[in-house]
Length: 135
Image 1 (cartoon, rainbow, N blue to C red):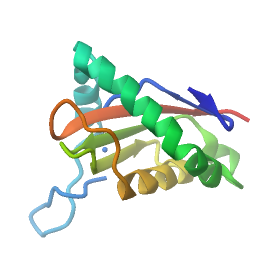
Image 2: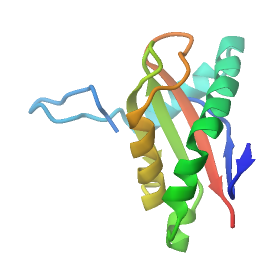
Image 3: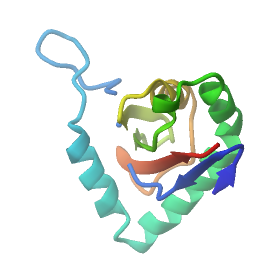
């Protein structure tokens, strides 16, 4: 999907919002664990359908986010990044992780945390959005 100088591809399923560590601080899912879960989800027909639905939703609801988050960004912050989202059964972001941690990636992640998306095939479903930003 290409719009406003960015490309969203390969959606699959995290910054911890609900998992708490021993001292009550958020404990993030390891990025590699979330990435593996998102890739595994793509192996089923229902996972492929959700990948497409989430990608459409992202493009429809976050075009303005991408414009705002990339405006005035330094070249190093315009690198390709992965956005991993653990989506609740109600379609809310339970966890959002990005890699690498550029200012653009963190900005997009913060916006994803604020709203709801399409309901996944099952609760706590990892989905991946591979972001490529082009001039």
